[in-house]
Figure 1 (cartoon, rainbow, N blue to C red):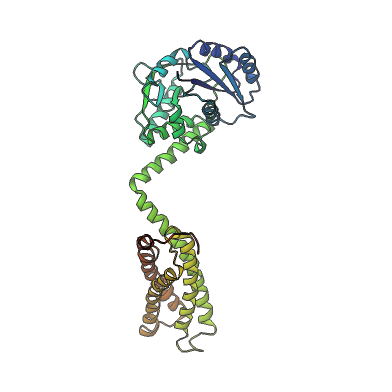
Figure 2: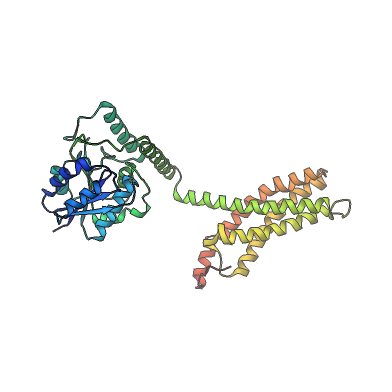
Length: 397
């Protein structure tokens, strides 16, 4: 027989607790875990007193109010550690009726996750003002569109998960604090392909106490759903292969920026100093050769250790030679632009030399180097060569 745990987070729910516990305990085959956040009104103390007379009632105390999401996460972890097969979320204010548990548990016989839904046929809400009704419906609609979720009640908190379902949802990475936790968990469940069903429930307004919903909780939900929706849209518009290419390009450009700073700095110092045209014939060319050679060394280290680290060669010498050859190709493009500008077009100022070599030449040379680095020096050919020769890939310089 499957072990079923009802998890109820509480904060200042003393007036609702005793009646709710009594109604849950009337349901056959279930156990109850109260997760109390050190309620100032003594909810946790009352839960302890009730637990002393009820073997199926457990209490988990937390030191402070840390949010609904973390309370459920701690409750799920407790339930998994104690061997429960089905874990059910339920509010502590009495709005979820324990008498409707049987409908949810019956659906769990053939599904991984079951949502007690207010908005499917047969579901309803009692005694809600129109503003709250509008907020709840709008929240579900927004999350449904933004996250492409085919469910009606996305924010509802009366739901059940199988043990295997919880394990697939990577609880440790769920950071949502408030009611957004419900959206987060449902989106994860849908993304990993769990079998999810909605069954109708009647949601009743609390009799005692006040709602914990506030502007911060609403803001968190809007911000997170918007962020997740944009991420989903980005994934559709930009496939993973393209995103990997973009990340690699950005890393390559970051390394190149360091090399550029070295190149420009050294070139300018030499160009106006010991290798000025007035002192040495062909000084600008020699200055460029020296500055670019130093930049090449910096670029090789950065690209090997960071940009293309997953594709680097064991044979460092071979890789270094190829890197040098690819870099020289880029250097020749840059030097060629400088030579044309300085000696053919007669543009001999420091500004002209920098524009021709470090703007036009650098842009063309950078594009050529990236293509050669990615496809030849660190590319798929490097991986195939290692496999062909049976070399053991060790992550060393």
